[in-house]
Structures are given as structure tokens and as C-alpha cells.
Length: 237
Image 1 (cartoon, rainbow, N blue to C red):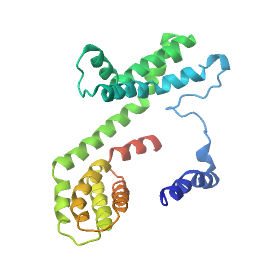
Image 2: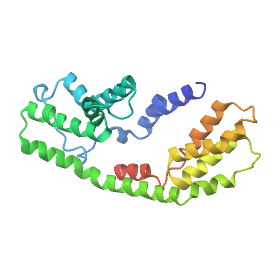
Image 3: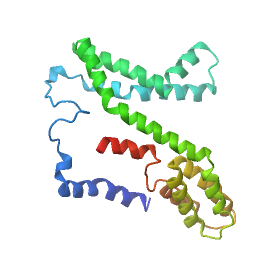
Image 4: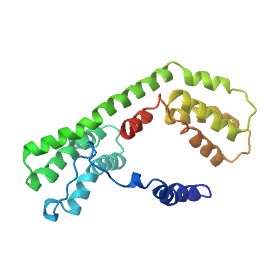
């Protein structure tokens, strides 16, 4: 909390106010952005209500939450009857998003007296900006998996075996090296945990500090082997 609260304040409202003064143009929309569509002012009667908008936006979360709660209540990892099969199916991420899109077409389109041609054009235009982005993210993820399957993580882990370095510093360095080499924060954090864990058994270092070190190291220096790097590149450039 000592670290989290100041960092949250600095990275949130304080940085936002400073950035707004330094780069005011970044907080205004100039012209039309193809990904966002042309600017248009809507009348109140043309817009859906707050409740319907909230339901449409949160529908995927609701469906996945229902599926998760059902699994917890029944204690079944796999469905045992037709009803559970249906609940588990609609609770998967892909199915929930598909249902949400179809629901949005009805609530934001047909119920607003929009013509089907207009709705289909809107859906098509929404796909264009993200099509190349999805391909790039997929390519970045593939490259990351090639590095992982090639044994880069195991090689780096062996480099630090038997070291007498401080567990906190070691945790950060190993996580950072793995992150830079593999491009995956998750893999870097999990692999580093396995490397550093044996050292903690013979050390009185605070485990919470080691966890923070692993977390900080695993998100350092996103570059070309990270799918997230290409996502931001495609959005900002």
C-alpha cells in the first residue's frame, strides 16, 4: 500500500493533469478518425436509454459470471446435463462476445429503427480497423511461442542457478530478462517464481517484496516479440 497509493496518484490524476497542460492537442479530437467514424450529434430520442446501454456493454461479463457461479455452485468442471452444457457454452469468452454483438445489433440497431443495411455497414466498418491489428497480434503471439518452445526460458533459468544474489534483485533481473527474451509477462512471472522460490526457503526476505520485484520485472520493455507492442503500434501510428 505504501508503494501502490503514491504510484496510483502519480500515474493517474497527477500525470493526467500535467500531460493535459503539456500536450493539450492529445485531449481534443481534430477531424474524423476512421476507426471512430464521422462526428455526428445525436438527438436524445435517437439514443438508447442508460439501462439498455449498460446491459448491452456488460452482457459478456454477465454471461461469463453466470457460467462461473454455476461451476462453483455445482462443483462440476465439466457439464453433467443439458442445462449445464448450455450455461457453460454461453459462458465461454467467444460465445459470450458473439451473443453480445447480436444483442447489440438488436438493442442499438433494430430497436432504434435503424435499417439493416445501415447496421451491416456499421458492423463492417468496425471490422476494418481491427483486422490488420488482429493479424499483427497473432503474429506477435506466434513469435513469442516459438521462443518459448525453443527453450529460451530454460536456458535463461539455468544461467541464474546457484547464484548468491539477493532474492529481490534476482527476481527482478530474471523476470526482466525473460520478459525481454520471450515477450510474455505471464510466462516471465511464472518462470521467475519457479527459479526464485527455492531461494526464499533459506532467506528471511519479505515475500511481498519479491512478488513486487517479479511483477515489475515481468512488464518491462515491451518490444517486437510482444503482441501488445504491435497492438499499440497499430492504434497510435
